[in-house]
Amino acid sequence: MGGVDLSTIKVANASPSSVLVQAVINIPFPTIDAAGFLIIPSEKRIECERALQFSADLIAIFSRSSRSVLSPVPCWALVPDGQEERERLNQTKGICSVSAMLGGFQFPMPQDNSLIQSLTDRLAGVAIMAEAFSQNTSAGKYREFVRFFEAAFALRFVNQGKILHRFLAPAMGYTRAEIGNWCSLRHPMTHADGEATKELAFDHDVRPIIARMEQAALDVLFNKVKWFTRSVDRRVVWSPQAITTAASGRGMVRQNSKQNSMIFQVIDDFGVFALDLKAVLKPLPETWWWRANRADNAEDTRVG
Image 1: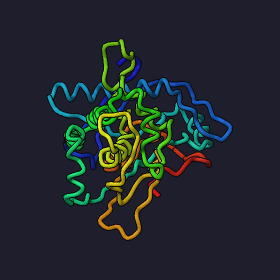
Image 2: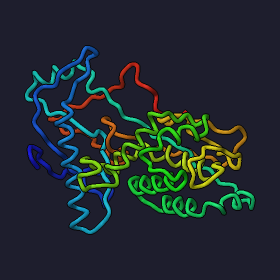
Image 3: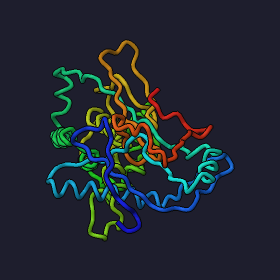
């Protein structure tokens, strides 16, 4: 595909339903920054990622099945041209990994009559939230959450950055920039006619934001006073047992709360695809070279 060579490789412990595809592209010896990290040309990496996505799409079409793209461990490697290049690579820190652990919480919802009655004036919101929870992909959930927020505030989602930020519970730590990012993906995730946007977004583009959108949607569903209006008035009907307090996934759990569980997903070194922790390439082929480290000032993205 263009300058990318695609081929399948075997992994001993991979799932029987998975196909491991490698994308290979030629690059010059990477630049080394002042901190000792390798700078992999992003445009070349993106070419490989698009080729991998294309191969997964082809498999889905010809097998008429669903597909997901996950990265193995490790998700990349360099093939040095001779021992001299390998020694130069050995003197570096490898790449600066931006891998993240996307975290969230699951906990039981109190099933009491008063809480149920509080939803009887917003049946559209209930129906759309049920549709969101019925989706198996992040892309599907994102589109339903967009419809949900539009139904709640009677306003196009691309214009909701300010109003949604004003409404959401301050303890949850939502920022205008975070919500603005959600809104900016609305057209690329919904349109493909080249008019609203010339960009296209897919499942992996919205995966990092879905847990936080879900938390925000539940806050709106239960605690917004007036449905289908631009009002930001709040009521105290429901509060979660645990919340994330930042886009990075940090969180808090209410003291003495029960039956909470933490869910997480690890994203690859480039922050693109989720990692398949069962697909471990070990040992690596002798011709490959790999090393990754975090920057000294990297934010800890685990749930706190």
